[in-house]
Length: 436
Ligand SMILES: [Zn+2]
Figure (cartoon, rainbow, N blue to C red):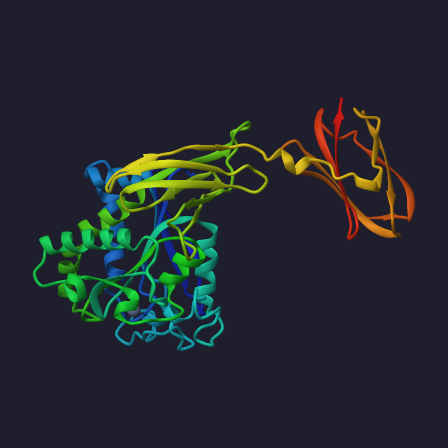
């Protein structure tokens, strides 16, 4: 149910660890991926401890507690309790009392990510090792929802941090943050009450560039919130159980939000193979808020505030599809599986004056290809199968000005329909042939 993985290593070669918790932990399942990560500021340790406790709570309550069981059965949960070990253990491996905010290069990791407004290096520093490893880890996954944990304030901060304008899903961000804070308030006194009673839009608090939250939300098309969970950066040990008591129900509910919204699988209409697709909400998505599905199952998870939406699904070489009037309610989900068909117009041949001939057609073990070239030049011959998958690619084939004859072995092709494409700077021809 639990496996330990490594996101990467810090500059001083400490491992940056992550646990995966799922009912079939060794398998990639047709489920959303969720990610908690804490303490990128090394001296903000409350979240580090809360995450260790959350891992323990999930693992020891499976099959006992209904919410925990539901989450482990339906979500791939990833938790990284400490993302800046060099900062936290700056004073040595057995000492956190000299912890610093920065990494070993004295760089603030939460100003060091590419920024949607201020470019790739908004802090004028190279990307730090910890962040490069983190970005690679996140790109290997498709986290539909995440949070990163800090201290120094008591508020949930949602995108954008860099822009004054609102995220397309501002109402949804506000809703899930409100839910988190309201649940906390039931079990605490005068805690997590800053700004709008414990929640704020990032920019209206203060603008930052190079933050992780905006990087994930903009460049990875994810949804990330920054949790500031204790006013004191370094609370005394005997206060830590209180922070757990205030927050644990909200931490679980927050994970559960990844199971809501509009979701389903995008597949090929004939083969049922998963397709990598873009999912857009028409007249709604803006500033990179469209999402992409994950390639293993073609599953997508569009978290969104309740309402009725028109969705557009598109994939390379496929006809896109618009599905109108899809309704979804808060704390609930709508399943919408979508099948896309191959765009056959891409295969109409552009013969013009090339006078392309493929004989015999249907062929057996050999093709004779005849065509006219206007120049002496090198060209490329590519064979695609019916599903537009590249089967053969022959590069640097010399064609002389005038008539050319090229022979091609087709002995290794399965029976069926294929497309032959010849291209160079001056030529683009495509023609269909059969192998019988
Ligand atoms: Zn921080």
